[in-house]
Length: 576
Image (cartoon, rainbow, N blue to C red; front, side, top):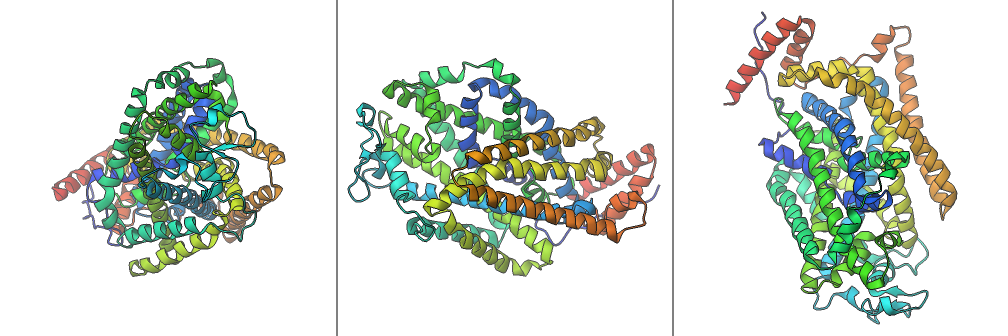
């Protein structure tokens, strides 16, 4: 048997110093404010607790295998989502779509983070500003939240909703030029903090890792326990545990669960690939692939219990159902929950600080990893050396600042809501479906599992048939999403938002198809297997390890196992 060549470390990347930091980074990426906003509404829309059944099925048979595949690619190649398509150059045009949706996700995260930071700062005032109608910002339509349930007037708003709409969003303004400067300053402050943390990239993130991962979990557990101890929480919990199993036959519920599950773990956005690219070649990604979605699921359930427990007090005070509370067209994070916290029997200000601190840290860490992913793509695309990282961070922040005024103006806020819904459903499923076809069909799931065998000495052949099934399932979800998106366009308040969505999606499809046709024409006359074959530089970034992989691929099963075992034992002994 051929002697095992020495393994050389990849010098262009800083690796995660410990497996724990690696796992914490994946948890930070998958636990976002999108979970907090969408899942309570999803549970309410489709009959409460029974949503856990499709959620568990989708997580087990779709999300965990797909997360596993993305982690394999990143860790095996030490490259991000740009160079990953050396595995299937024919679909390399998908890079533009992945970068675009990650860029939009950065705006969504920044939008919620700057609002959370603003509310957090205001929470330290002697009296919470949204607890009363202050003449400095309130209009005649404002009613103090204590007396609002007893009011029988139309065209009125409680002080919490009025503060958010009239003061924070400045809804009385009706043009893009009237930008809310308060939010713009918080936007700049947030970007500066994230930009400074990104200068040293992995080294800085590892210093913050434990704090930014565990602190939100502790805060959320504290909020949930305190909410459950309130006497009125029994109404919300009773509503949550009364399932409507007939909704399980509604295909729309399954489609929405798939959309939300993919959005929450960030499939198709390149973050999982970029994070795993900094993992050691022998890291046990099988455990990480299961841990990430499961932690995400537990966090979603915990926050949903917090929401149901809180909104039950408003339902009791107004003598209405929980469904009626959810159906109100106001912000969950910045109107409904702050209003519910004001109705707690004691320490309302303290709990408001805890709540907005949770939102701020959760949003900030997700924004940090989004910009980390985008700067990694910038380096791979333009072959920048590591010393230009400050320039790439500055350019990315400038691009965000250039677009962001649209989102902090009143009309821009409407566009933000529609664009966020579009990106988290129709656009995302389109990207993930093409990615699944490229990985599991073009590159072939069998080759991917051989890579795993070589890298981790684990035979995962039982996943092969599941990998082949995933693209077909995603195709059906994508078709449904496109149909629902086109049908919903007739209900848009502003039709030009639908036109913008069509332009963005059309451009991405044009980029993808043009790159596909260019690749086919360049290789015209060759065997179709060569057209679909990986690029010559596909594989591990370490040249010696790549040669070992080629030998491993060409040998028989017994020779593979013996060779792989020797390679694995030598690596472990070198690490110890």
